[in-house]
Image (tube, rainbow, N blue to C red):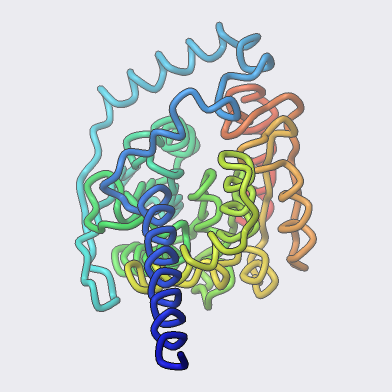
Length: 322
């Protein structure tokens, strides 16, 4: 009888372990496997154009025309680095040099499943303000190697390498770090590292408080599931397959260590990376800081809904330190 009970319990443990692994792998592939299509983004109600954006259709069309013209007139130079970690990934970036003796630089980081190519609007605006611009493809995106999405955590260390590359090219460089969505989380996470004094300003647009927070929110929104046991199972798989901890990857904890002036931007109609996350990251840092809230703007829409306020705020903030 005792032997039979041990066998039954062993089978139950094995079944639970297998189920745990299957759950973890499913949600890892769903969110973090760079080679899997992210179908949940298609027709996602949180990513539909807001009424505020639709009201700006004419302005948006003018900006799209300007973006396309910029791409024709200013083709980028491809550059690359090899990541410092054991994976030694070849990471790509587009570089736009704006004059021979110019030491103003901007690094612009894209969002989840996007790429450097999707950052033309921000590249163009920084370039038109006299900046050299570097637009990296984050690992697992665009032309960069990597079979997983780093959600900003490993990308923060890649950002340090890109900063070093710029300084090697131009020791007098004055650098702005800018990121949108996952790119916003990337620059916030980088802010907690020991940055060289060349980095003068950090600007984040609609980044999240932490990877675990945004995944917990999406888990409830998409599946109606609580964080336990799914997040725990996914975290184990993420540590095994991607080498990082979902609960460690916190923008809040990183900006708390930040010493660089920072501008926080968010649309108050953002329900994909909830607007409420803005206050938490803003309050976590004690440096010179400002926040810009664009009424009616959904996720990643702040620039499109009110480009005049958006860019005027950025240039006024940057101008204080550069």
